Length: 358
Image 1 (spheres, rainbow, N blue to C red):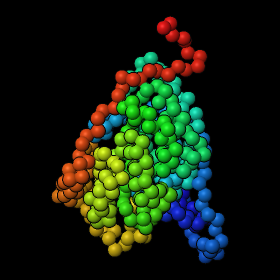
Image 2 (image 1 turned 120 degrees about the vertical axis):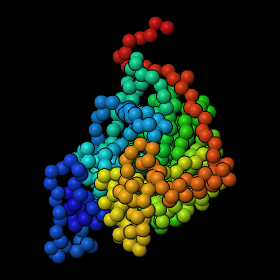
Image 3 (image 1 turned 180 degrees about the vertical axis):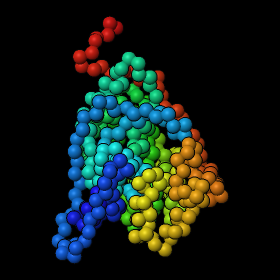
Image 4 (image 1 turned 120 degrees about the horizontal axis):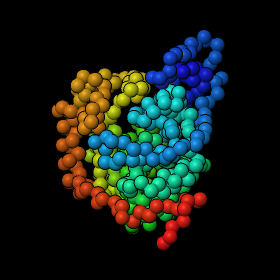
């Protein structure tokens, strides 16, 4: 439904609409009858509900991803990044990938217990688990719920490797767990940095930490001996891609040891949301940005084919890739991260399970 834009003030949100997801049969359009003024409207607040998952580990067979399993402590993300490719997943809940994605969140408080059961299954075969690949595990509500910390405690106790992607400064709270895990070769962290411009960041990622705050995160994690990757992601043509080298250099100075980049992706409902955002904030270059994306995706805003969706194709994509390769070589960020250890894994003991003889 789209009614939130006339029922509430939406200051501090990236999305400006709340269209129903692709599975809904009806759209509801709000009409301004002129009787209500913006200053009379209540602020749109974040609402968090809970769910009890049956399993925590999700598996994928995508050939262009470096992991085959992941966990998500939360659904939806209050950081509200307008470009987030996870927005379409909210449609599976009967919610909008627009404002609902950043304001109607789902927490999974028993996730650590369910994760422990998943790892204790006799047929389980260890491989690195990715966290933060869909929604950010260190978004603001983690401070209240502590679900991510509970999951980390389970993984640390089991000696299980984990790769984390985040923008959230709350990760610093868990350095006491991540540091010892890093010394055992069990953890890597990627910090996503889209821009170094605080004003652009505020418009595009309204509730995520500012760019300089993320550099502090990189420094503090690196000082604790945790391998950190600076992720220049996503690069937006004609908007953030001029900053590519500066982002990598700032990350390297802060202590990052590795780097990566991804081009802006516009799957399903993300495309109209981003185009709406561009028309509102950058009307002078909106057409140019979309033209570049279509050049890289065969005339479409997005091409979901394996090995093409992350980077695109054509001259513009090749130029960005060449610039990245030259920059990481100059900054000595072109090393591959060593594989995380899987030989330390010991299945956790679940209460009520049969006792071991040895």
